[in-house]
Length: 259
Image 1 (tube, rainbow, N blue to C red):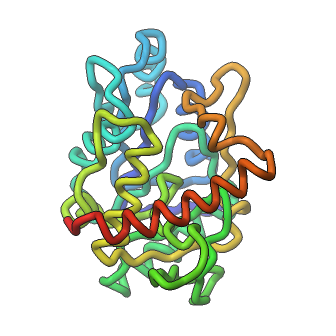
Image 2: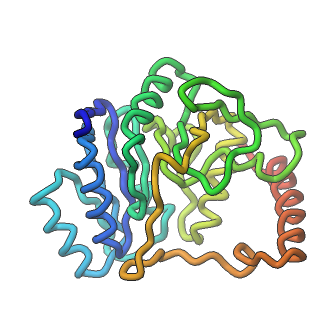
Image 3: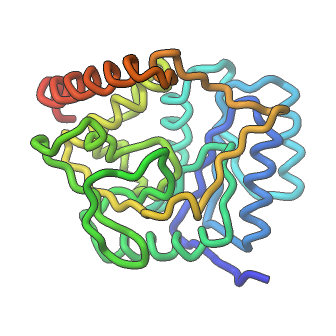
């Protein structure tokens, strides 16, 4: 039986769209881990009525605030309006298709301690599709992410990610709001560049596969599909993709203005 964790000063922000069973699984997972937050905000992006009805039913078992919009307006808007509703100093951002594992509460405690001790830190990342290439070991499995424009490879640009992370709730004031009216990739890319241009600082948990699972069931598959260019494993396409990103990211870094 795990101990009880109360994360004072943290609001759990969950973005949701047409996957209410996944949302329920996430909330139940935190409950089983005995994780309690000062507040929970569910930001919905214009889901179908059956999912909204299910979410309202969840109020009987879980305490959260539901922030809605009459129509789908994209991930950028969904994060922005959810963040606007938060009053605590810290935000734990997670999309509805993730499941926290047993090790997560302890590492969230570590992350909160780091953020309290170091006022220069803007976020702590808990999950990724690949390990950030330039890391300076800190402690307890966390490392500081380092960015210099002369470092090799395009993956150096991915200091920011929409994957689960703890951040200061003034994040939008420092780095600007997420671009709206564009697709998910463009919105994330815009925040990624803003984070770098405005000298964002972040920690990265290296054993990220041991903290959270991303689960997309056949009943509620991912609502986001990457294009062929992003997904293809063809060696020629992959090499071209890497070269294109390297040139594009370096060019845009110098071209993008600071907030």
